[in-house]
Amino acid sequence: MIMYFSATGNTKYCAEFIAGRLNDESIISLNDMMKKNITEINCEGQKRIGIFSPVYDGDLAYAVSEFIERLEFRNVPEDCYIYGLFTCGSMSGNASERLGTVLSAKGLKLSAAFVVVMPDNYVLMFPQKSNEKIQSSLKNADVTLQTVIKDIEDCKKVFMRRGMKIPSFVMYLIHKFFIPSQRKVKGFTVNNDCIGCGLCAEVCPMNIIELRDNRPVWTEDKCACCLSCLHRCPKRAVNRQKSAKNGRYINPNVKL
Ligand SMILES: Cc1cc2nc3c(=O)[nH]c(=O)nc-3n(C[C@H](O)[C@H](O)[C@H](O)COP(=O)(O)O)c2cc1C
Image (cartoon, rainbow, N blue to C red; front, side, top):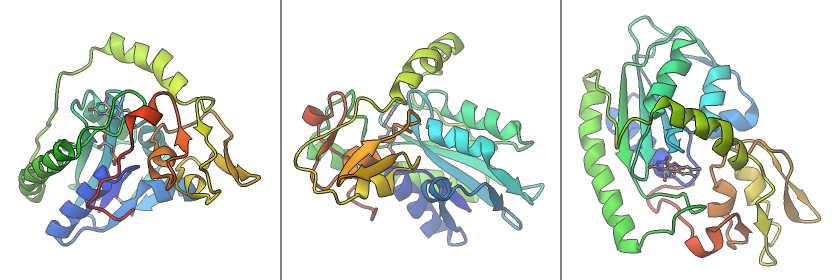
């Protein structure tokens, strides 16, 4: 079983790639589970459970850690191999430590962690790369995935990391100051290109976007900062911080 969270398709791509090659894996979208407020999952008979997430701010995506904290894993076999797979633009930070901690509070053990570097979708901060760079990053990701599949098949206990581990006082500061500001919604804007299609509301995993007079309104300061609404807007009408000049990204090899 693979559970994944994905906004712009990178992590979904990895989930499909690995499930496709391991044959026996079912794929579950954490975005859908969050939207439907599903709070338990039956893991009976599972040999492996994969939890796939993007890295946000050097950590497991906040929406994912919060959701996994709430989720009740039922009937997990004693010898089940539970692994994390994290996609990131360059640095995986402390994502695996976070997942390990969240799972261990539930009496579950993280057996392995994999990292796949993919195109960075953090356009609030960084400009989109050129098409050539995106294509080359996607090719490299496929190479990484080939080795990762072998390790998963063999239930290997490996812990991959890209970049350095973030010191705990830095993590503390990120969580105390930076992440709360990212979760606020006042920075979102929508311009006159908006056609009121409602896709932004549909793809918001936190259900905090409403259409009022055919325009999106962000209603609560609990944004996942996944940027689904921004990247997936068909008219590029949604913006926040520097996104207007930084471009958009959607993984071209996956259907969202
Ligand atoms: C809010 C936010 C924070 C991010 N922080 C990091 C980071 O700390 N390190 C990194 O390498 N990539 C970071 N990224 C990039 C994503 O992890 C990366 O593009 C990921 O593959 C996106 O997955 P998705 O396409 O499945 O949504 C960040 C992206 C967002 C939106």
